[in-house]
Length: 121
Image 1 (spheres, rainbow, N blue to C red):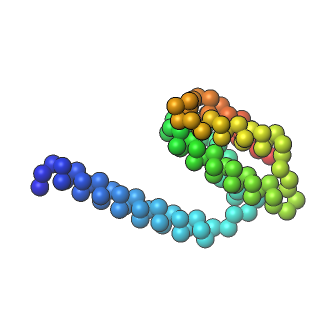
Image 2 (image 1 turned 45 degrees about the vertical axis):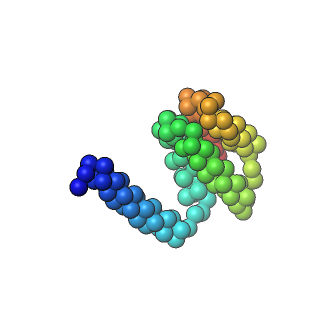
Image 3 (image 1 turned 90 degrees about the vertical axis):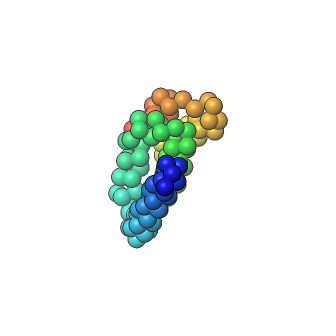
């Protein structure tokens, strides 16, 4: 087998394994109940990994911002909760930072992601 063919085979095998792992994780996640504490813990975990997320590039930062937006939207509408203006403002600062990949600044994104984490109540 030629080197190129063996590389493609390795890549294909890795992709198949990654897909299986993702499917297993998705199934587990779909059956996990998300209460207030679990949702807050997930937001804390994502924003607590600010340096790694921002270093992952603009697409990783974009995914984190979108995930936090959905999580916080659900969290802030839970019974007994209401959106916190400071937290929402902090979250809103993330989106312009990922709009233009050429303008992405990992250090600045990490700083704003940490600010979001600090604002969570």
